[in-house]
Image (cartoon, rainbow, N blue to C red; front, side):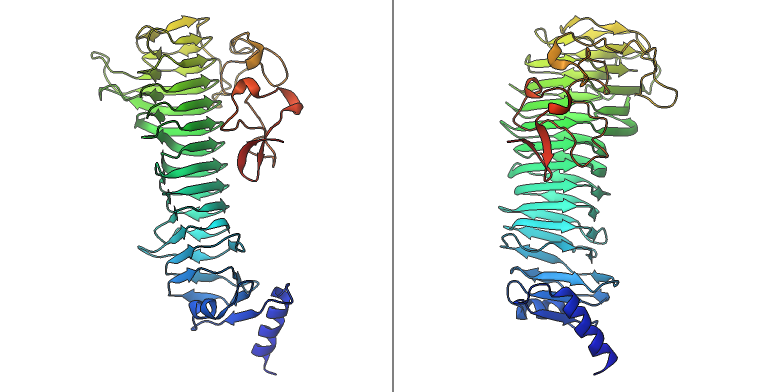
Length: 429
């Protein structure tokens, strides 16, 4: 027996954990698709290292694996279609100009450790249910179904459509912008340039524990629109929002649309004015329009023209404003209670981490619903409140808020029964 054939045989034996499944080997210069067409559901296709310039259509539950220690690059399009709980697709480099990964009408599909940066991105379409774990992509687009991204890095934009039923992003970095329209949207403990929600009706949106950096001279760190949507924005840091004289859309958070409801609690908004001060820019930390169903509590706003702008009937409680170029407070009739006008005293070069003598400590609303996790009175800013989880970016089971449960239903301390399970924000049974 030749050394190559012996190596192939040994590799196949190592991969073939199911005695009833066949293992088909693909050598450089041969076709992966030919083996997919030949394979039966449950079979394993072992691919030797190399570059394969072909498009792949995977419509049966076969397992594609890289031979141990070898790297496989597929420069064509990879299309998953009509699959139900197939084996994971992992470890490959996929795509080239105009060609990427597309998933259509496939449920229970996991893409793990895939590098799709060379191609046109990852597209999820139809009635799909897809999880991305530790993937790299130039962009992600969801036009239907359910999509969960955990620990991914997206160098471009993350886009979803109004036909998308659910989108979850957890510990994911989006270097571009998030333009989401999903019926349910959960964006937690992520790093990004902006989060924008558009065009949906009766949607439920949670943005929690994120770091949003507008990189200077860019407006609207968080933009929330549509009608009759429910928005929860908690424990985020939105920094370097720029404003000048570009109208009324240069705000830390901008909420607009009829009948929307908002809970904006324990966030940090940092704005930067670029102008000479002799005109009338907007530049608000929190700007809510068209709705009086808003609670704005325990936020820190630095550098804005107004800390909060909202219609009469909206109650803003125990927020702290600092370093406004105009020394302005609230606008548009919002009712303010317990406002603090003082330096929040961040630790040097570590904003919004609070120094020991910060006036934010235990200065939030006294309602115990919003207490810190240790039971003490709410601390103003993103390190305070029921939803603050200092370990959410590092542990496997952080406490999070779900789509369907309000903060009043989140218990404090270790007994909290809201968990992240398999990438989904759900209530523990």
